[in-house]
Image (cartoon, rainbow, N blue to C red):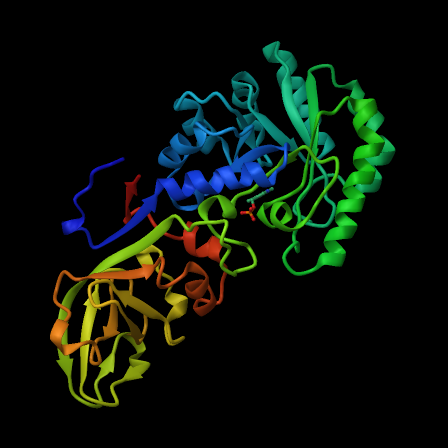
Amino acid sequence: MNNIDVSQLRAWAEIDLNALRKNVQFAIKQAKGAGVMAVVKAGAYGHGLDAVCAVFEKEAIAFWAVANIGEARRIAAMGTKHQIFILGPTFPAEREEIIAQGWTCFVCDWQELDDFDARAQALGKKAKLHIALNSGMGRGGFLPEEICQEFDRLKQYSQLNIEGLGSHLPVADDDLDFTRQQIDCFCYVWETISTPLNLCYAHLSNSEGLLDYQIDGVNLVRPGLMLYGYDPKGIPNASLMPALTLKSRITAIQNLPVGHGISYGRTFVTQRPTRVATVGIGYADGYSRQVSGQGAEVWLERQQQRCSILGRVTMDQIMIDITDVNVNDCPEEGDIVELVGAHISAEEVARKANTIVWDILTGIGPRVTRVYKD
Ligand SMILES: *Cc1c(COP(=O)(O)O)cnc(C)c1O
């Protein structure tokens, strides 16, 4: 899609558009008739908002889900035919634009509803809103009892089109009992309020919810991570294709004697004469500093071999041990190194960094050029 010459780049991410296409098609199939709200917040999980949206735009999704109006604006500027949903919450100063543009968003409390209603009145337009139900996430929204008892109050807002009810699953990957209870709670609230309020959208599944739970009556799903090719459980999933490969290059090679420290803090000291390659990526690019000292490895593309990272990850560079690399095919300056991809999975890096794949992907910084392949 974009023909970038990578020969002069130090760190870049190759993004396989075909993998993204396959993943979204799988999500649509898995949704079994429910609409798909493609979650593309945080620059499409670090893959680049514009390019990812150009791929998903052509697929049968129902909504885009974004985190804020900056992201909503960028999608609107592309001229999309799909609706835009802001996961919110929103600031008062953002609401006029949201109403004027016809974007939909979550509302979490009465004050927000009052304010949306007043602003919509002033604009002479209707605001499109979904009720955020706090069924266990604790990140805002109406409590189930509250909304079941007081939903009549929602009818007083003449300027609001309250169209849906949504909630979120915090432990779908590791607490089935809790998640089942949440689903029951959600369904109970839906049955109580959907008819009197004339709601048309019910949604609570993230990727994990969509992959592993059958939820009757829900007609919209909100997958994020799986669109980029990862199973939230941190295991390979044959139906999904990771789209991103993070790469860098060897920038220098040195031979160090026994007893030589490597990187800040001298946390690693050579135990043998060591051939060390410096690689042009660091934590400022989003390659987590937390992997330091955790036995993290990288993949030498030409030699098809793993190498260990030595000492701490620095801002712009890391050092790797190439002592044992095939002598007939010696690493050279300019050689390509994979940090995340088919050989070193994002799950593996996340484990070493004591974090999650979402954090690894969205952490990849603006200094890393995105290169798109189709
Ligand atoms: C980010 C987000 C999602 C997507 O979650 P994944 O686990 O990446 O699929 C869905 N819903 C809400 C409310 C979110 O904030």
